[in-house]
Image 1 (tube, rainbow, N blue to C red):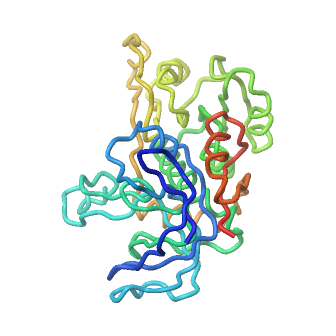
Image 2: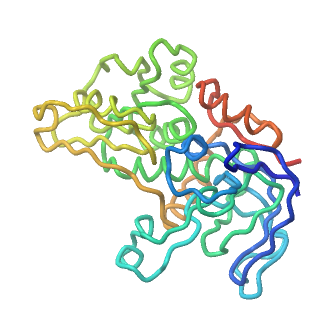
Image 3: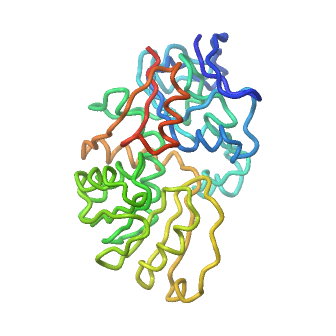
Length: 326
């Protein structure tokens, strides 16, 4: 099968043997795979411990073509999605208390498990998701991470009505639609003078859009930071009301600079969102089926994965980048 392989020499297009499903696994013919900023963090070595060689990609959409001996959850031909969380131990305190996203023995798709930058992949059937109808394969791919992590971040905002979003990329463009449908107001912060992203944000329902160094017209009840830039944390704190929250939604972020206690005081909180749970997937896909989220994608053939990653790095992708296998 064709695949993009990450090894010590970099990312390369290769022809490798097709994998075989384990006992609890399904073999999936990959149709599309989203390109996530986390893939860049793995590629750049900012996330330690990645297995090498590795197939990147954790926003996988495909069909089951074979079940492992003990796998029976899905039928052959059924469309499924494979997200970042690939497996957990199932018996630690985190797993037993509904916080499997924090499991110390968790394995992750496209990081410690091979992912979807390939024509075929295998995945533990317990961590795959049936996908709602109405989403073509390319448009469904971003739901598997940008959607899931974004939804967990939005949930962490509680009942906040005025929400600032820093970094208007794949996750933000999905969560803005969900938040607007929930009756919330979105304030979009983009790279300074990035007029295209600001126009895009307004089209998706943002009541205000400006540069990350600008002051919004209203105080915020909460803020979500999708951009991996630590300096945004104190900036967001300055715009959040007392009792409000700043939610850091990325798996990697540059160092947060020192800031005065005064902007944290007033029971403001800074918290992170780590990974996702299977329950997050069930809840989010139920929402996605009801409100018909419009994902905006730019597609690339598999062999052009490096180009897709470069476009994402440069901030040239509006919405999400998605690889096509056929």
